[in-house]
Amino acid sequence: MSKTCFVIAPIGDAGSETRKRSDQILKHLIKPVVERLGYEAIRADEISEPGMITSQIIEHVVEDTLVIADLTDRNPNVFYELALRHAIRKPLIQII
Image (cartoon, rainbow, N blue to C red):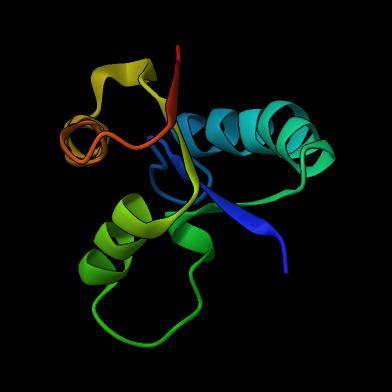
């Protein structure tokens, strides 16, 4: 089983410029790098478990081995999730 890297990012609506950019960063930058290091990268919109999405995101932010936070667009949800991760003092990488 691989380690999990949760990607905190502004996602936006399907087809939006924010979503297109976020998808490209995930596909071409984050996933190739973390996969070479033995991680599986997961972003909030890829969580397929039924239930409260917010609690699932918080669980990933708190429990996953690594978090990468994309601070582009100054998204409030990204800042909130990053603050949670920072508060528990687990490994994180910030990009912008």
